[in-house]
Length: 84
Image (cartoon, rainbow, N blue to C red; front, side, top):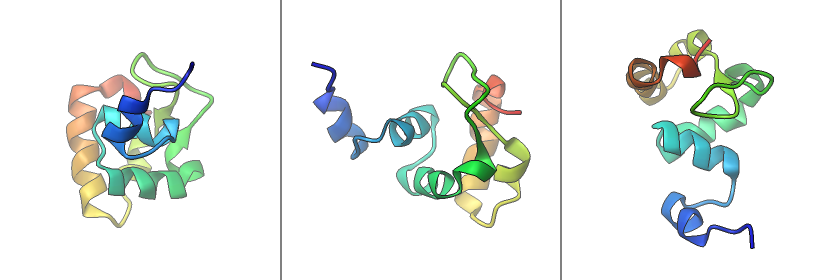
């Protein structure tokens, strides 16, 4: 059975993208915004040890949402390899 219902309930979604973004430190609202602009913020062709993708730090820090900016700063300190 490939379903992890505990994880789906914990993160409030069945989307692996949403779960991965929340797992690395973004809240649900920030993860939703990032996914809605996926081409701008996420590079699926690159990977790191923490996730099967990398994030565009410059774009995240220049977005309009202050929460994303703050979360990006914190996450980039803890997981610097996640960003390009």
